[in-house]
Length: 338
Image: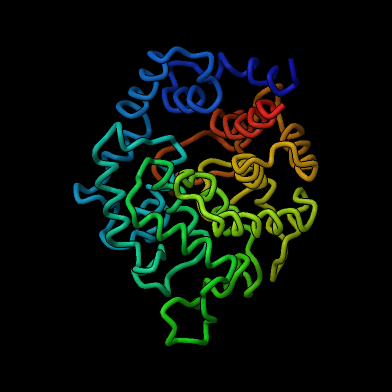
C-alpha cells in the first residue's frame, strides 16, 4: 500500500459522514467511487443536490438564471452569477440533477459571453481576462454544459495564450485582438503589469482539464504547453512567477472555495488533472501538500470567504473536509498513475 492510499483509507470514514452530504458526495465522486456501490453513489449525489449547499444556492437563483442582479454577473462580489456558478462547480453540481442549472448555464452564455468566445465582466469583448475566462469555462463544463458556444470559449482561451491569429491591443480594427486587461499571449494581464499572471493561468489550466476529449485540438495542446512552461519556469513551490509587486502570501493558504485568488494546491490540481502526475518537477508541490497536513489525512482551511459568498465551509485553522478532498484528489491521481 502506498503512502497516498494509506491517507485515502485513513480519511474515508470522516469524509463520508452522512451528516455532511456535500463533502460526502464530492468525496465519493472524486476519491472513493471505485469502492462505493452505484446505488450509494447515486443516493449521495441526489442528497447533495436536494438537501445540501447546492440546493441552498439554487434557492437564491432568480428563475431567469441569475443571482443578485441581472446582466453579466461579475458584481457584486462574491454572490452574483459568476461567483455562484464557480462555487456550484466546485461543489460538484450537475445539471442532470436540477433543471435550474441548465437555466443558469444558458443565462451566463446569453449575458456574459461575447461573440468570438470571450467570457466578459461587461458583456463586451473588452471585459475579458484570463481568471474570468478560466473560471466560467471550467464551471460550465464541470456542471455538464455542452453548448457549442463553449467550444468557441475554449478556442479563444487557447488562441489568446498562443497568440495565433490574435492582433495586438493597438490594432483596434482587427476582428480578433487583445484588450486592455487580456493584453497578450502567455497569460499576460494588465492587472499584473502586463506580465504573465499565474493566478489567471491556474484558472485557465483548470478549464483545460475539463475540455471534453472530442473538443481537444492541437491548438488546445499548444496552449496547455504554455501553461506548463509557465508553472515549471521556477520551482512552483516558491510561487516566484512574474509579478509587478510582492509575491502574494495567499499562494500558500489552502482554501475553499476559490475564485480569482488561488493557491498552490490548485496549481497541483490543474497539473495532475492534465496528466502531470509523475513529472519530477511536481515533487516540491507534493512535499508541500503532505507537509501541510494537520493530522494524517486531514488538512486545515486557511483561506475562506465566510460571510461574503453563499454558504459557509468551515473555520479558519480547523480541519476541513473541503480542503482535504482537494488535497487527496491530487494525491489520488498520483497514486493511480503508479
